[in-house]
Amino acid sequence: MSTRWAKELPFAVTVTDKTGKIIEMNDSSVKAFEKYGGNSLIGKNVADIHPDHACKKITTIIETKTANSYTIEKNGVKKLIYQTPWYQNGEYAGLVELSMVIPAEMPHYVRS
Image: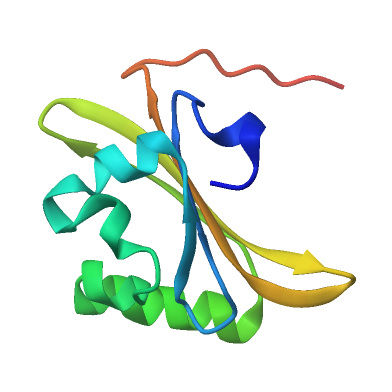
């Protein structure tokens, strides 16, 4: 990954271009997608590693350029998934997906 500060973050960072082609993955992302090919996914479309319902959502994010966030639980591990457009020189450039493990119970604060 060319962005050195993100390389060893303890959560997955996956970056696509505006067509959905994966252009960057940090170490955690490579590990998370190991069974799908890990680092060899760079250059492939995110549709290659997501089921149809997820591909439809990703297409909507690309078309509307809006963020999407949700939590999942898999094998007893809860994760926050955040997908958002990224821009270069003010022009839409693609998507960034962050995937991080979160505690099953998490404090929530309302601040004014």
